[in-house]
Length: 192
Image (tube, rainbow, N blue to C red; front, side, top):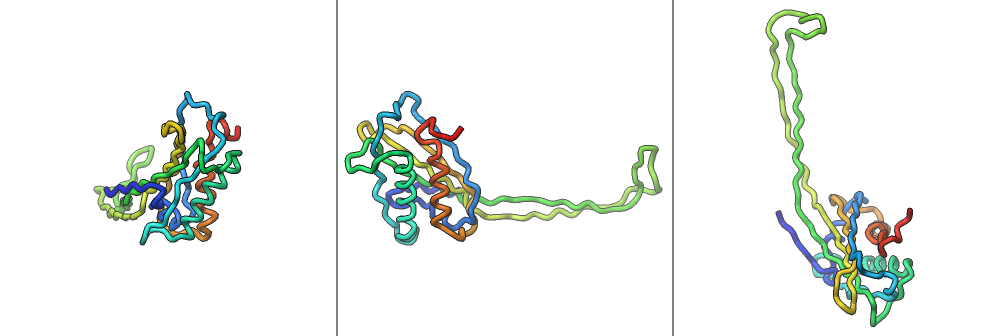
């Protein structure tokens, strides 16, 4: 199993995968520090994102930065050089193979009926089993929101998707994925 972890600062490889997926279903979970008073945080900063050579181009780096920034602004936070919160992300990619089997039974001979066997002779037949493999990347993007003052993790959202092809509209997909991951930030903000 090949697991890669990358700081969002050098572009999460997950978005490379997300960008090459055909709008996969992003499954989201989140957790947070229950003792934190999220009402006291008003400002944020997104870590400086840079394109890593051979990974993601600058257009997609800009899309990721913009999507995180827009979601935080939409939630009423103000971007600042001296923020209360720092937003960061880590990606985890696992190359996986799915194996499925299909068995076809065939034969002839006696057939069971509720009142007994129909037909005669011994049951004769066989089976044929085929195996299919499917290679994909299991990708997760972990967005961490940290207190700038204490550097303590306050909130974490995880988006996970099976990645196999490129989306038609990468900007729309990135926006929707980040919106979905950040939907429960700050805690209690989710729509009821």
